[in-house]
Length: 356
Image 1 (spheres, rainbow, N blue to C red):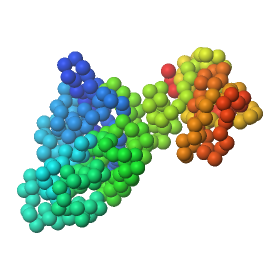
Image 2: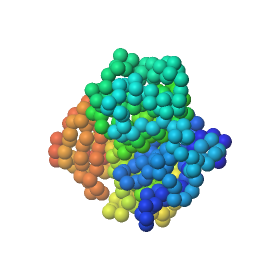
Image 3: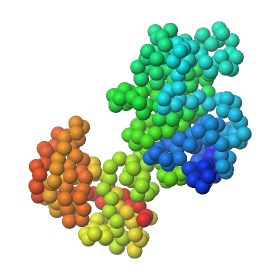
Image 4: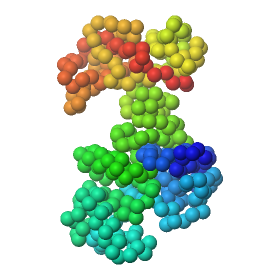
């Protein structure tokens, strides 16, 4: 186990009969880190969180917390706060009683309970609502109560299973920032499960991208988005244009990729650009520039098909000889009319090469 690891999954597996939900997975999580487990439904991320919480038992491998194996430790002795997607609040209790519940179970003195509940309510900015029933609260308020209940007994690890999934877009984005600020202020280790790519990019120190029970890539949001390790990661994290091809030749600091469908791209040479190697090329929509003239080594004649104004950007679909492309341009740019002849221009440094 590494010196900085707070939590370690060591070749863990979870199966239901012949179905492997988590398969030979290893992951280290540092003290005070905010890590998101990101992936589509059924990829194993929630199962791994439930294993860490103690609500699921392992089929193989071991989980370590502070250098100690915890597979045989019951959930209530793991000292972890858990926030579920449906909040799991007690509707017959008041806000204060819900928050106090973990402390009552731990037989904390009444005077200390009152003090901690007040502190938790202040932390989530709900002190005036302590005597209201949770059933009378909005979704955003219930989410804050669930968060306060998970933090009130001062755990060092907080587990969150898609806690913002039921909120509307505006409230969801505000809660993302609120949770991020709480994490920074309290120095907690947070393990956050989500299928929302934007949410993971906004909140996380690192992201572990799940696919079919395995981790495809672990890295910072910038690493995951700009330097995807596989075609799955490139396509799952935001929009991208992907092309299959073969490295044709190297010329100084650049390499030429011959596309399977014809044509090619010039890219920055790297360890992945070995002549003859099959590769996948990823080009993010915002890295493509639409112009009326060819301006560089990757200038491809194209015709606009559709342009949609989406508030902070324009989403333009274009047809070219190599593929149909998605382009994202500045919202202040003029809208391109349909059937307009243009050039798609891409800088070689904005093409990311992935081994096939």
